[in-house]
Image (cartoon, rainbow, N blue to C red):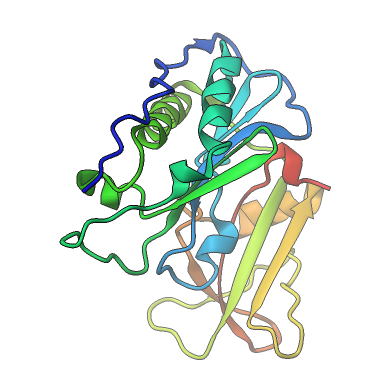
Length: 242
């Protein structure tokens, strides 16, 4: 297989160091975003999946919509990302005749400089050299940065959430009544999924009334209307509010 070892124009950046103390209020739009989407996942999972890492113009970084930290020299990360995403070749999968065909894997995406690059099954195809070295270098750098934000960052807990509820025909295990004081999810007549943003007191009531260990912890509820749903939520990122 052509490993495309010549495509090494962008070296892997080193681990980004954070500034001490809490991050400042982030601007409205990220300068860099990295995450995963798609793949064979349960209903509602993709709607609730947060980017693994977003970085804003002032250096504020948020990992998994859960931890926040101020980065030093974030511009270097953005430059590396822009250099990768501006060339579509860096998102093109190249397989040899004996390499496996992987089904139902997620895409890894990078967005920077007004451009976006998506790579299917990026991590899985690594051992086969499926993508250029610069794409994997960017992935490694952003993964290390996200891990540092998760480890050292402050809790990110704005009074704004995305709440996702999905209709069920039946369920096993514990079925909880929908908590009082939490607005009932709205469904169109034929819709089986409800996705809504909640703010202020409405968001705080949902956080108290719908406990979960993390956004992947979906619990089953019976609505006052008699509809059976599974529901979870995550915090909204600064650019998602409004």
